[in-house]
Length: 480
Ligand SMILES: Cc1cc2nc3c(=O)[nH]c(=O)nc-3n(C[C@H](O)[C@H](O)[C@H](O)COP(=O)(O)OP(=O)(O)OC[C@H]3O[C@@H](n4cnc5c(N)ncnc54)[C@H](O)[C@@H]3O)c2cc1C
Figure (cartoon, rainbow, N blue to C red):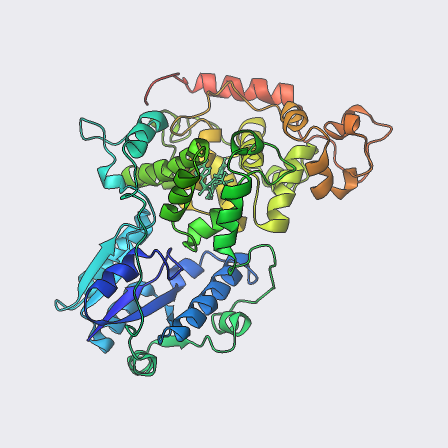
């Protein structure tokens, strides 16, 4: 008898809640991954680096599985249809997967559950988060809307049992791959062949492979331990310095589950002195809980006061084009956008500067910025991205007060004092002195002709944003 372990945001074989739970039963286990056409429809770029990352990860997992007597079954199609068909074809007794908290994936999982034969159980376990959003409630049973009290509960009594590792004792426990593959194909499902490597894998689903040496998939434990050993202690201050890597850069690995959040918390707890970093993992869970309890944030402002046109958001295409191609004339803003386009990553401080500039200085609809990040971030996560943009636009939880608008020149001088970050990503400005680089238009004689003038005057734009928010009746303080 067989069980399926459906891998989604938990692309690893260690410390794996769904796999460990499946192995605790006596059935043979068949791991499966689906390239869900409903999700792929959002990936417009044929060379999307996230798909390269996933393809490499799946090949890596398959290699590990082969060593342990199993194989990964990869399918292509609409997951909500495929998974029940596969379960029927294999006569699966159960499907194990990690619980997902996004509205669309929750709906998909419900559809899968309904379509399963009564003899197949659908078992979901907590893996993606330390604490289930359903349990993160105030004393009166309502969800938190402010981070600090949420975090107090989240962090309270967190100890070794919370971050204990799920042991995966899988030797000899996998289903015979040839018969699983045959059953899947016999049921008319499109199986993706992993034998020829990631490039051929991607070709089968209509995407192209480009080697990406920035985001390797085979060195994740070393990345975590190197951060914990070398950078955790300095993290509270180094995390804001733009030109250095003062943070873990683990976000893509957490996003796709190559590392578990339990491993991260455990490593930081055991090392000690990692409270600030653990709090950032808390923000990740806070935004996941906000999305779970307030799914309207996907399209609307969290704060009802700003919904339905209360803020005259700008949808000007030329302005959006300048903003999201790194041509605003504000060097630190442009460096940040170009960092994202070049690497698939953007420093957290830079994300805040960019989101503030777009939503306040340009009054661009925060949804445009959110979508731009969604298309390019390696670590794109609906909950964190939406939370970050709504925070910067002052429409979300714990929102930045509307009158506290980042000054891009002061931010640049403070967090990139020598202009190193700017020089790295804005080659036109490499020849400028440190004195000139933060605001090149102030020195017309040295400003390179091929770098734009500022798209707006910050002081004027700031006054305009404050006036717009005031008119929308921004109320300050407390919970919304
Ligand atoms: C406008 C905006 C958009 C963002 N979009 C995303 C996104 O799509 N995906 C994403 O993972 N993060 C997002 N963030 C949060 C944050 O910028 C990234 O998580 C962080 O930069 C990742 O780098 P790191 O792994 O080195 O983080 P570290 O500083 O090492 O933090 C460790 C982990 O904690 C989590 N984390 C850290 N800061 C935050 C935060 N503010 N909110 C939620 N989780 C956090 C991440 O999982 C991160 O990997 C966004 C922030 C802003 C301001």
